[in-house]
Amino acid sequence: MFEGLTLGSYVPGNSLIHNLDPRTKIFSSLILIMGTLVAASPVSFLTYSLTAILLLGLSGVAWGHFLKSLRFIYLIVLLSFLVQAFSVPGEIVLELGGLTVTREGLESGGLLSWRLVVVVILSTLVTYTTTSINLSAGLEKILRPLERIGMPVSQLAMMMGIAISFIPLMLQEFQTVIIAQQSRGAGFGSRNIFRQFKNLLPLLLPVVAGILRRADELSEAMEARCYRPGAHRTRMQVLRFYPRDWAALAASFALTVGVVLIEYGGLIKNILG
Image (cartoon, rainbow, N blue to C red):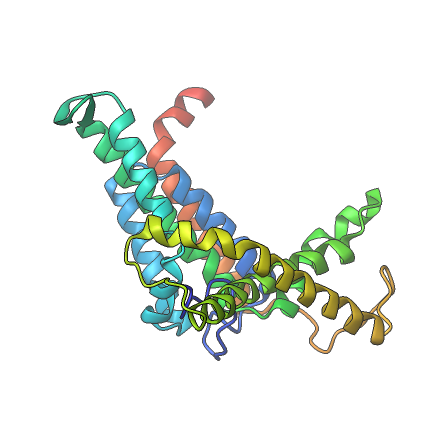
């Protein structure tokens, strides 16, 4: 079931997106995600859809590689669509027993599903094109001002980086346990997605045990390398903004500001007026 899933894993490459500063990718993805959440017109939908497709093309990540990771959220997208279709009141287009499907519900469900897919594309592109070390370094730089109020920024950034890197390890652990169970005669070949998730419940305990074992090995490796929380450490690669980073940030900001003005320009004008 988890074979081929690459959610959260780094894909080596030398594309334009790979070479951007991790802070640029974090800020740009957040800006574009916020724009996606406020988009409400067909023009905005098309704009962000084309932007996500363009960024995926510039990253050099194969479409097949990305579509495999989308399998992880198919059920979430489907359930979100169905909940909206059956719960939003409006013009009835279909009746199923005591349930009704409305035109407004279908539109709302389609919009929500679209938002989820675009948000996943924008967020996973960051992890696909950034190593966990650089991502941790970028988060540490972004959160650096919080050290003035006593927040342990370096430890927090390291924890976030480790958490992200453990996502593919968790999926790998699931696949290892499934293969071990299949070799003992367990059946995981059902195409029914609900039955697949039901079959996964007995695997939670061995998977959690495997994750804890890997975490223990990681802590021992850090202790062997004399890691001490809060100690000043240097990095092989110093993060630095280049013109391409400023251009990417400016383009993301301009796109989102343009969408906000298109969607809510009249409202903003009335408030200011």
